[in-house]
Length: 92
Image 1 (tube, one colour):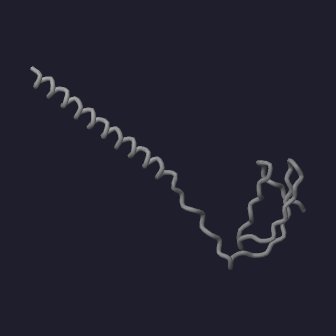
Image 2 (image 1 turned 120 degrees about the vertical axis):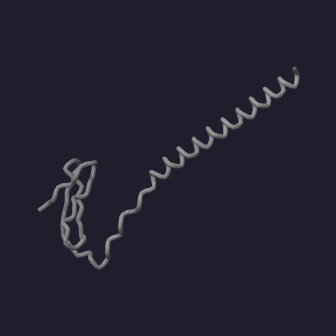
Image 3 (image 1 turned 45 degrees about the vertical axis):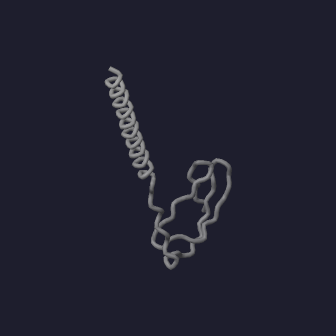
């Protein structure tokens, strides 16, 4: 009778260890896949030869700060910068 109880408790212990290992592997796999999704490639660096001089002025419609843009990518109209969480407006 004692041998039978010993076998059951040993089997229960082994099952608990196996279940704990399976849960640990599952948690690791889910965490690793979640972290892998955060990996984002950095933006492509602009070609220094394709930067041309410009003279654009922008003003913040909220606080009135002004920015002068002196260079931009060739062939593209530059987007207005953001300030006070709003797009700045071009100044003539």
